[in-house]
Length: 64
Image 1: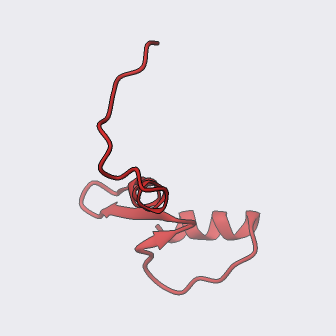
Image 2 (image 1 turned 180 degrees about the vertical axis):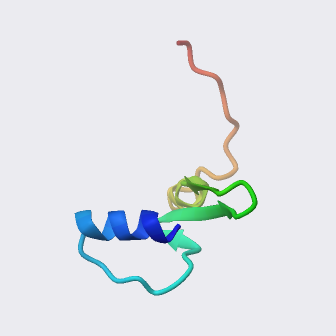
């Protein structure tokens, strides 16, 4: 994770303030045992849906 942070900080301006739980509106999920990490935007999507009163709408599949 520290290598990822170092690489990220070479591309954008910022500071390292320890373990991240959220970054750029995304939830950061780490699996130390598997040495993996992922960023999830579900929280952002939920905020948008709630803001526009669409949280309780039914989901539908769209044709591909």
